[in-house]
Image 1 (spheres, rainbow, N blue to C red):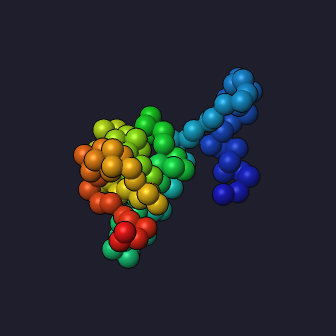
Image 2 (cartoon, helix red, strand yellow):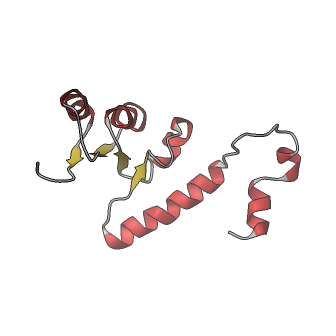
Amino acid sequence: MTDKQHLADFPKKITDRVKTPCYLISEAVIRRNCELLDSVQKRTGAKILLALKAFAMPAVFPIIKKYLHGVCASGPIEAQLGREEFGREVHTYSPAFTDEQFERTLQFSDHIIFNSVS
């Protein structure tokens, strides 16, 4: 993204009005990025998932879920967030689960990825 594009997404008249620290989220940028990811999916047949560990903002899930196939969770809490708020496929990976975590993860996940068979 060029500096000009960045300024268009966050005009000074807006950035001057907010107190920091804060997050400014551009729905236009989210949509543009999702369209790019969707074009990759269509060209390759791959399914792209939103990594909740990196970006878990339910306020923009309605935009993102129009493009991506689901979410990748790192445990039962993120799996529940993905199921309840994103409402599409939930893939969960954790290097280890307690019995209780695993039971809860099963309730909310479509796919569970294991570090090893044991």
